[in-house]
Image (cartoon, rainbow, N blue to C red; front, side, top):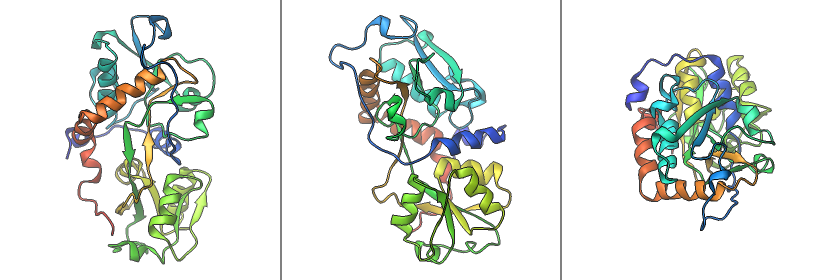
Length: 285
């Protein structure tokens, strides 16, 4: 298990709500700006500084001890790696806090980039920009111990279950195309509603992106367990750094993320901080 996940997580219900809100259907990111010349000093919120936002409370394993400036945690480490690619020393990185919804709303921003598990979607790109993805989340099945899903070991065993997911999400798309259930899935307006339906016994299982499923099983849904992780089958739930719409920084930030992916840095950081998310979880076939 990665060292971040060995710690006891002191997180509240808001952590799950933030993650639940973040994850929906993915699409290719937007880009803007002139990558060849790069941004000018005045293109940054504070010239000479790289201002990065994260949640008003930042949770493990993305930020350790709610201290992004430490560089500890997956997203904190990614943020500093991007800053380095852009030519900023660690001491020239400044952190600010925003709520999830306020940051994604159209309008001026108090940050250059925001990193807090934002899934890239066409709808969101109408009001903000995204970098290319720094992480692609898998989807997992979560159920209650002793329920109809207890003992299921493969995709075939899921087909006769009543499974819930958030409508118009990567989770719902994966459920339909990978599981191909014989029972009509129950689709909900939010992941919170799907979680509530599971707790009320209205469904046998739910599909959540794996990081959210990890938090749900370990901290929020009593008596729950991982049934297993689903194959991606070409369906991606991709997270990007969020920027203001038509930001002059988008192209350069995207280039930085692309370089981190190509040189193996993102894979190394994912292994260091997120490898424990699926430790012991079966990949359903």
